[in-house]
Amino acid sequence: MQPIAFVKQLWHYPVKSMLGENRSHLDLDWRGVARDRLLAVQNQTGKLASGKNTRRFFYLAGLFDFAVTTENDLPIIHFPDGQMFSVDDLKLEPALSKVFAQDLKLSQETTIPHMDAGSVHLLTTSSLAWLNADARRFRPNMVLQTPEAGLLEQTWLGQVLCIGDTVRLKINQPTERCAMVGFAQSDLPADPKILKTIAGTGHLDFGVYAQVLTTGRIFEGDAVFLEPQLLG
Image 1 (tube, rainbow, N blue to C red):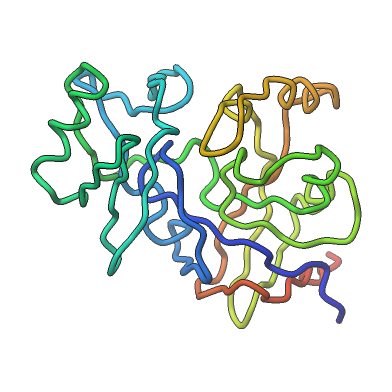
Image 2 (cartoon, rainbow, N blue to C red):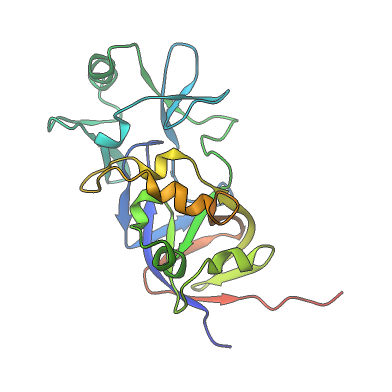
């Protein structure tokens, strides 16, 4: 059986809506990517900081100016002015509150997931080539190298991907986009035309979410196969 793709990039985001970290491997458990978005900035009303306003989230401008790296599995938050705080540093929350001029704390996920929707987020280079966009705008966990140009991963809905030695993921829903994809981040300037181009397809879907069926570790370079579908 020939692979349909290879793992090109792997990302995780220890703190929701802050810049993430490129990794050589990821561990996947039943929740999704291990420790991905396990932490979030929370305001006094209990809402989580995000790039949009919903019942659960509140828009907090400037979060993309913060980046997170990990040292021995401990997230380190990098402030835009160069300050760095580990997430267990008692000075972190007062520093965040000062920057955003409101009382904020760092909240760890409990029974309600911090994710917007699906647990693992995938993109292909085919979709990125179609849109002519940088993968970082879409905050995927996984970018798959594929030969075609076009919205390839949308054709995998309902199917199972086998990645590396053990991991199996079921592609269960498309990823609906919002204005966040056009926000400036790191060296990427603001580009509101990106969402307009996606919307030109007749919907706002770009990328897909997947559910973990079999846990394990995946690496950059791993081959990706479509699991044969059984005929009922």
